[in-house]
Length: 473
Image (cartoon, rainbow, N blue to C red):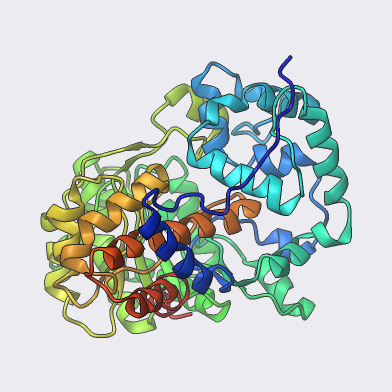
């Protein structure tokens, strides 16, 4: 059994080892460390703030929702049932949450050097005041300390929201969601700002496993004939307007590629007919997704919702895992992505529109300097989202800045968003991003490419102003 050792968060973590640059980074970080958190895109549960019920225990809060964590454990042969991860049908194995936590603690060494360890250690140290490292020996002490704290008023969801200095957070919902939790938050009188975002993938992607039933429900909710092309588009406009009335300022699209299309109306109508009658093949499905990105851009021009595309991801790569546990279980794998040709039809139609705004993400880092930075450095509508998913790490953030700065600069990017389901990691993730940006800026100052006052202004913009402006918050 491994003896517990001290858990320390060094004040200079992630800063450059060079003494000159480190001193500059410290001064820059002091400018941004206390700024409010703007979280313009993520997947937290709005029910947390609508109901404000205590979180159940350490396992349910920190392990079960976090696929960054359990994908690593799964890669080492640990069964997801043993961790209490819900199955696709909503059932779960009968697992004592304390035993699941002990299993996690025995394997915590697997996370050494990973961003998950950075985030979790920040949560343990800063949120719960723990001062020994998580391991097999300390597992029960951790579990008890965290679970006991969660039953107290300062650790209720709304209290943590306020403690973390979150100014606004965006959740992500399907068009089929009634947004009852968002309405409950409004009705409660609580002053925390929680907004939604429109994620229409289940009713846009013909290859989504729930497409047929989702489309049927889409029609029931909107009262439109969604098996008619015009009625289908009206249904989207109706739901987008409802989402905007509930605070949404953005849409999000998780397509396999960033292919777009701008078909003549008769061809678009014929394609839609093949899709809804079950006669579409894989090529039709890709073309329909491509056409719908352009249709969504047209609607964004009308309603002002900022459009986000998260492409280049082979989702649910592990078929057996997907069939047993469903989506979002850590089996997403990056794909090669062509932005230059893929986006051309959409950009030809809307790229010069001053009211249109499109935020691009990638899991294909080879596109940073070759495609994304040149595109964002030219087209007025384009902005680069931060390093995402596998690249949301100190190394990934450095690579993103180094490869996009020369062509896109800082101001064709949107700062940072955490894109997480793990609520308590949000301050940690933003802190890592602020530290890395300050380290990058410190290097530029030390090389006399920026004056320090300029760097301080950029640091504040990246941490706070740019995400608010980019997402129209």
